[in-house]
Length: 131
Image (cartoon, rainbow, N blue to C red; front, side):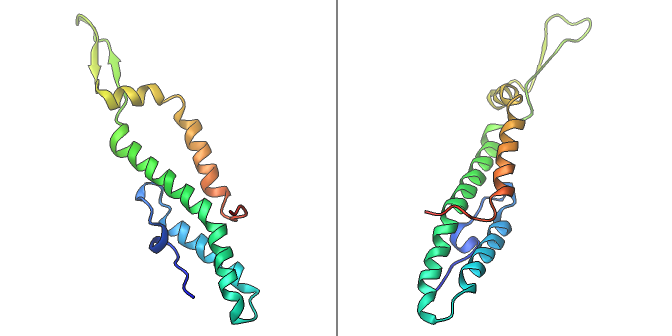
């Protein structure tokens, strides 16, 4: 029997810093599962249980990591800014492009999104939900 842990089974994008966290969670869960094994014949069932407990959480964290990477790399930029200078006719636009406009529009809801995301990342480590 072989069990894969950490990046060997669910590599993460670097933007959430979750690669090592997921490896630690893997080790925590597999230790819990194998702890009660008294016979070699029990190992297969214990490893299956480890997979069931880790599958949903590690996939969700991997998805959040990829989403964060896509947002950071493709979607966001310095927010668009409109300023008025004294003595100048009309407004001055700074960073007036697609990413800048999207960032400006989403700015009010990003704190809520990040709160939900971080609560999930740092509260689900017990891996109590399985498939």
